[in-house]
Image 1 (cartoon, rainbow over the protein chains, first blue to last red):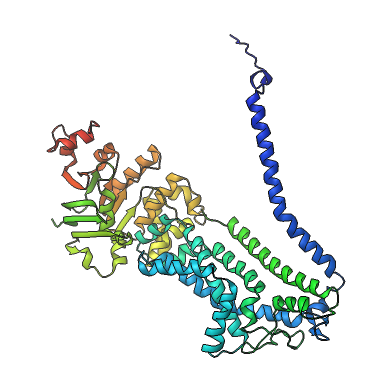
Image 2 (cartoon, each protein chain N blue to C red; image 1 turned 120 degrees about the vertical axis):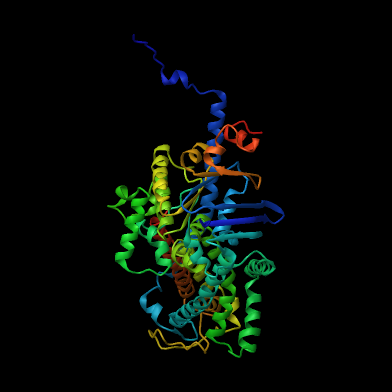
Length: 305
Length: 251
C-alpha cells in the first residue's frame, strides 16, 4: 500500500531564532577573518606595487649587469647582486649539510639525555639571538681569531651560524613527520638505523628538509648586520657579467648593504635606483621562495602514504 | 627434541614499571604457540625481547635469558642477522612507502642480496605464501601504502617471510583485517608451520584454539599457565584464571 507521506523541505527546516543568530555570527566571523587576512596581504602588495612603480624607469638587464657608477649615484647593481649570491651560496653550503646531519643525529640516533637536552636548548636559543650579536661573534671568531680577515668566507660563516639553528629545527620537524611505525618495520626486518634513514626516512622527508633550507636563502640574503663587519664593503668594482668575479677570501658588495648605503649615505642618487635595487632584492627572494613552494607542492603530489 | 627458544626468568622493566616478572618457558620447533591474555600483560614486550628491538625503547631493562637454538641472544654479535632469523608482524599493517616489490625485497637487500633473479624469486614466493600474489602480480610497482588494510597486512607477512625466518612472531595480526582474510592467513600459517616455528600473540581466544598446538596465558606480566591447547581450552585447566579468561567471565 502506498503511504503517501509528503514533507516539503520548507516545513521541516524553518529557520528558528537560534538558527538566524547562528547564521549572523557565522557571517560576522567569516568577514572578520577575511579582513584580518587581507590586512596581511595588502601591505605586501602595496610595497611591491609601489617599488615596481618607482623602479620601472630604471629596471633593465643592463641595470642588473653593470656595476654602480659615479660614486654609486648611477649605474647598476652587478657587484652587490653577485656578492649576495656568493654569500648565500657559501653560507648554505656550510649550514645545510651540518644542520641536516645534526638534525638526523638528534632525531634518529640520540637518546634522551643531558647532552641532547642541552643541544636542543642551544638550538632554540641560538635561533633567538639578534643578528647584530651574530655579527660581533663573526668578527671575533672568523675575522680575528680564525684569521680569515674581512672576507666573503668570514661573512658566509657568520650567516651560516645564524641560519643553522633554524635549519636544524625545520629538518627535525620534517623527520618527525615520518611515522614511527615505518622505522619499527625496518628494524624488525634487520635494517640498521642508517639503512632505515637512507631508504625510508630521508626519501619521505626530503621535501620538508629542502623547504626549510631554501627558506633560509631569503634570510641570508636579507640580513645586513652580520655581513657589515665581516665581509661586505660599501664599494668594490668587479668584472661585469663574470660569475666568478669574486674571490671568497676577499670582500664583496651585498644587495642589502648596498640598498642601505644608497638610501642613506649617498646624496643625489638617480631617483629610481634604490627602488630598483629593492625590487631586485625582494624579487630574487620571492623567486626562491616560489621555487621552494613549487618544489614542496611537486613532492607532496608524490607523497607515498 | 631440542627447544627452539628457551626463556628463563625473563624480567623486563620500563623505568620503574615492570612489564614481565620473571617468566620461563620453552618453545618447541615447528609448533604454533599462541600467547593469550588481556592488555598490559607483557605479550608484545616478550616479542620485542626476542628480536631485540626493545633496545630501541628508552628506559627498558631486560634481565634473565632468552636462548635461540641454545645460544643466548644477548651474546649474538650480529643483531641485524638475529632480527632476520625472526619474522615480526605487528598489529597494524605497515606498508612501507615503497613499491610492493621493494617492500618484499627490502630485507634481502639490506642483507646484501642484489641479484635480480633471486630477488624476483623471493618476492614471488613470499607473496604466494602470504596469499597476496594473485591480487598484486600485475602491479608490483605500485605503492604498498595504497593497498587496502587487509592486503597491507598480507604484504607485511610477505615481508616478514622474505628473510626466511626460523621463528615467525605475529602480534595480533588480525586486528585490522576482515574475517575472510583472517581465515586465509590462518590457513597460510598452518602450512608455514612445516618450515618454521610460530609465536602467535592474539586477543581472539578462538583463533588460538583453531591454530595453536600449545597456548600460554599471560596476566599482568606473569605466565599463568602454558599447556597444550586442548588442556588450556578444556573445562579444567590448571588455573582458574585461565578458565575465566577464556570463557569471558574474567574479573
